[in-house]
Image (cartoon, rainbow, N blue to C red; front, side):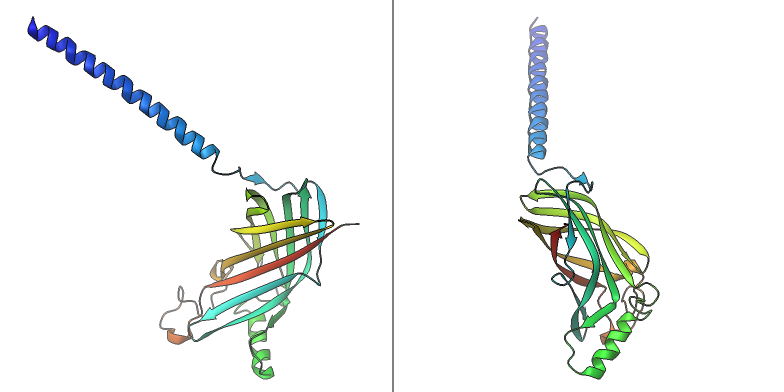
Length: 225
């Protein structure tokens, strides 16, 4: 009789424990879902809806920064065109195109050395500017993290090779002008720029050039008339 009562007691305890455990799991699941729903806005595909703004080629700037074991270089590349699309103050899409035939080195003052480096960057070792003069970027998806700040994803094409990249950007809208700013780290080897890369060549020593380089964008767009 005592044994029967003990079994009933154990059964009751296990039932209560199971019920509590299920309730806690359900609560945890609900809490996790709520946290996810408040963690940020959803990623949306670029639609190019809204008002079209054209890139101001004179005021916009594309700067590049590269480094190697023994130093670093920086310069600019000119844009050829670009567009941005805004729908009710929200970014919905965009693109820009640059001409690698216009690449310039800004940190080398010696004219002969500057010309030599510039021509080398235009050569097949780097951007193959004669064969593939244009590079372009097209936004494919957008996530607004906070007002005016976005996580941009898109296709970057260099040397006719396209790779998807993602980077943060700030976009401000004032009157008929939109300003977009961003910094992007690029692994050049993904676009078949392997010259003196430690990934592909050994024993380079102090001649090695870092695979990653930085692009800094300061883009000014104006409303199409």
